[in-house]
Length: 176
Image 1 (cartoon, helix red, strand yellow):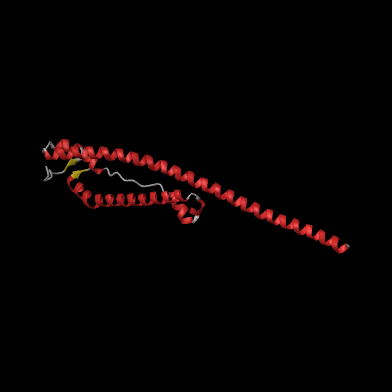
Image 2 (image 1 turned 180 degrees about the horizontal axis):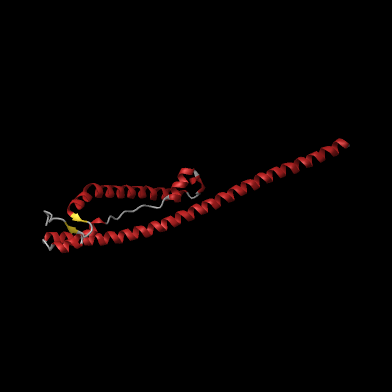
């Protein structure tokens, strides 16, 4: 009779230990999932903030580019009409402004390089963000090319022919 009583007692102790260990594993898993969702939310909030900043920068760049195109079209017209040098010189500072875009991708880069991209559960969102950052990479490459072209080809001409303090021609260029 003692053996049966001891067996039941050990069985219930085993059940209690099993339930305790299982509960501990479940709580740990729940806690890790909660932490992962919190991290995902934080990453997505930061990506959203960076996208808002990029949107503002791109809109500003579009407006600056439209203005630059308008001024350069006016300059071309003046050059074709052989206009007064002083009028042309007034548009020279416009030639020195280069409109470049540099994306804010810190959060995305952190996600990819840390391996925490797996935290973002929405697969379609991951694809769209990846495509966006490929596009950003292309824009960065174009900006780098424009900057390099300006430094390599245009800057030397300006330095040789234009007084940068006054924005006046040092000597009348052949094109005028």
